[in-house]
Image (cartoon, rainbow over all chains, first blue to last red; front, side, top):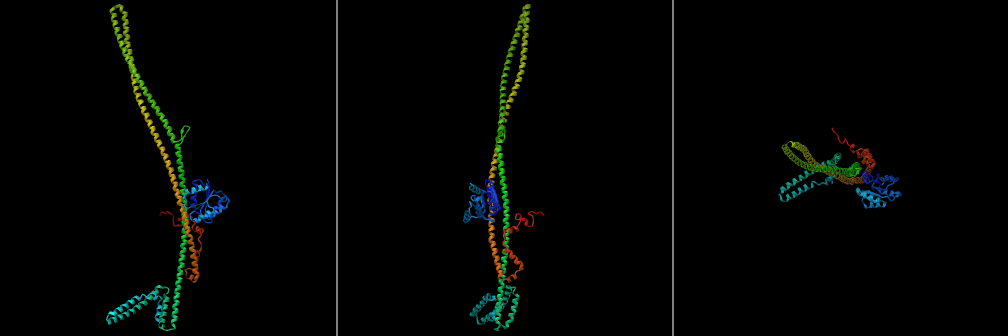
Amino acid sequence: MATIMTVDDTATMRQMVSFTLHSVGHEVVQASDGQEALALAQGRKLDMVIADVNMPNMDGITLVKSLRALPEYKFIPILLLTTESQDAKRQEGKSAGATGWIVKPFNPEQLLNVVRKVLG
Amino acid sequence: MNTLSSLRLLHLDAFRSPWWLPPVLGLVCAWIWVAIFAPFWTAFGSGGLFGLCIIALLALGRKKFAKSAVLVEEQDVQQADIVQQEIEALMPLATSAEILPQVDEMVQSMASEHQKRRLEELLLHWVNVSQQYSDAALSMRKQIHTVTQQTEHAATTIANSFQAIINKATVQARQAMELLEGTQGAMTEGVPQSLKDFIRVSDERLTKMADEVVRVADLSVRMVRELDAVQKRAQAIDGFLLDVDKLADQTSLLALNADIEAARVGEQGRGFSVVAKEVRRLSKRSHEFSDSIRSHLEGVRTGLNKTYGDMRTLSAADVDHATGIKNEVLQLTQSLEGKNREVADTVSSINAISKEIAQDVQNVVISLQFHDITSQKLNGMLEPMDELRNMLFQLMQETLAFDKSLLKRLPGDDRWLARLHAVSQPVTDAAEAHQDSHPQAPRKKGTGPAVELF
């Protein structure tokens, strides 16, 4: 099973994502903003990242850009899980290098399907 | 000009509110109407009355203007009195051409003073409203922050509880499955390992035992039949004994005849008589022997009859018993199988419930995310509110800078300035966290415990 990092400034969201991923046996690492996520990502092997967009210190889109700049995170799937649903924001995420965009609230089954699909 | 100046001195609003105009016009019209149709003396009389009315109205008007001036401007009461005195002092000189420009100047300076005061009051009111709005916005910000933190805490607790529920449900379903597998398992070294095997083995053994009992019962029936044959043979023996008895009787009769014949022959027949006696004795002994055999045979028959009866009873009872046991065993195994099926049904029902719980928990997971969405919306409200506060503060600063003397009119200058500065400080989340360091226990901020008994 994979090691997945969930990045969200709301503890409830991190918990929901962890809970959903744990239920199928994935290992989950939690970070409360982009900066913490970037620090945690370095020095460990992650198979996937699920990040919020609006966060203090470092937002999700900057995090995607920063992670893509690192050689070991160039090709891993990065999903953005957010309340934002405007096309402009989506486009911004896509051009930053995100693999996918999930609008909150997510359906656990749907999230697991997406994770299964992107992990291959 | 003189009268006009006097009226202006009384109050500037006098001309702006011509309340007296309609009654005066009414009276003029009434008089013209009367003058056309009424006789001269009546018209003259009503004209006089009209003049008196005008005088009375003017007197009333003067009184009313003075009163309204007092009501509108409480702060001007003293000044109004002074001005009134001055006007009264000036009244005799009002006709003088030198005095008139001074009076006009005084009136104009009073009007501008009054307007300035009103503007100041308006500004003061504006600053007050801004300050109140700032306070309210600050309080609202704190409230929003507290609400967000409290709902986050509650949502986390709910999420934890549901996580525990789903974990327990999973364990429960797994244990139920294990239980079901236990009842459906195989045998180890001939010893049944499950309820199903136990039922099967018990059924086999009990059926075997019941078959044995039935076989014994069959054997008994066959023995009874054999006994019947033995009894028939005993009856045949009885018949043979009768024949023996008849033979003995005939021999005895023959012996008696021989003895009679021997006696008739005399001495020569003595030997024959001894033989005849001996034959009669033999015949008697034959009788005795056959009687003895009959009596023994009777004993045998009685014994056989008893055995026959016992065997019949026994074989019938054995068959009944064996059939009964077999039926009971059948019922027992059926009942056990029923129970086993019930266990299987219950386990599959538990599994179905576990799946439903998982589905419900999924819905909970979706619903709990609305906390995050509402929090973001609430936080989104804070930004424009802060901007508005900053704008208000700047406006207030500009307003105060516009007229420094305004500060002197504000209650408690230092406190006022301190509050203004407080309003200008941007409220950061860290500052809020410091102000509200116990969001998890909001009720501690209250006055007492959640439950209190007196």
